[in-house]
Amino acid sequence: MALPRTFIEWDDRFSIKVEDIDYQHQELVNIMNRLYQAIVDRTAQSEGPKILDDLKIYTIAHFSVEESLMRIFGYEDYEVHKEQHRQLVEELQEVMLRVEAGEHHINSDLLIYLRKWLVNHIMHTDVKLGRFLIEQGIGKNKPWYKRIFS
Image (cartoon, rainbow, N blue to C red; front, side, top):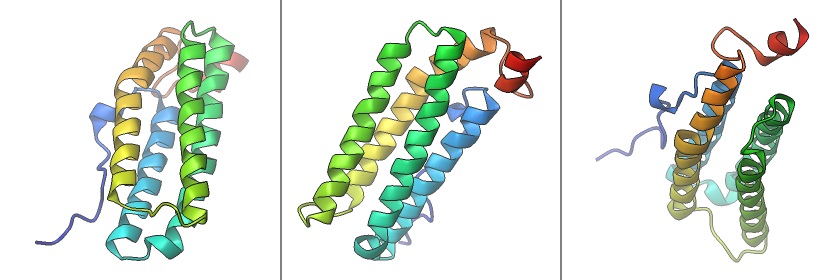
């Protein structure tokens, strides 16, 4: 039986109806799928650290966008949301250090954890943020910058 080509399939149920953030979530899924493919291809030990670094860098950039929008529009759950972001980045950094030291291998357990975290975060925390942003006039074909600068 052949393994699937992707670990996470983007699905409309992941959409928070805010185009910029949905696009960024899709890119996070793409990076996780690259890590999955490296595991399947048995190149995770050589390619995995770079992919994990890409994931960390993109995740930090994405979280910065979300957190900026939360601050700009006065999102009441900003601190809780930001703490979830901080915890994931810290955990990613710890895993990367352990991989670099040879104490941890890039494997399916890591992928399952990352998928569970991302899906849970999108489906619960980010969906709530999406509803808030839509109430602020941001959403599909309504970019945040037009709301601020118009």
